[in-house]
Length: 95
Image 1: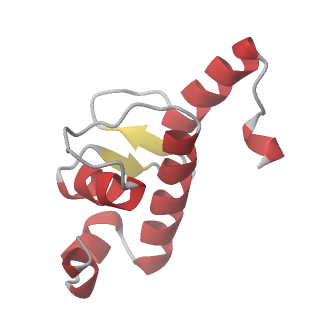
Image 2: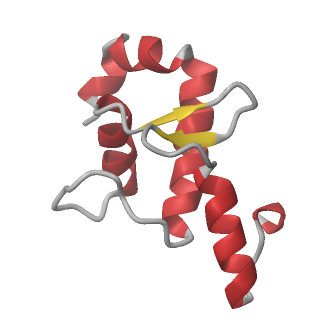
């Protein structure tokens, strides 16, 4: 998994190191808040899950910096925020 960071493939895939860092951070927040992984891995390591999602082209950052799933037009962060607002959990602004 860490070998993916030594190669520039993952950096080029998302458009730079800053975008990669932002994508990883935002997706890990969503996973910590209960979002389901988009890849089937036998691990609980969130970093491995996020890297696999990126490498399998499951997630990306849109032009406004929101995490998007390839097969979905709505933001994964926005979806999670709406879900947690319904159950009384903290909003994205609380993090």
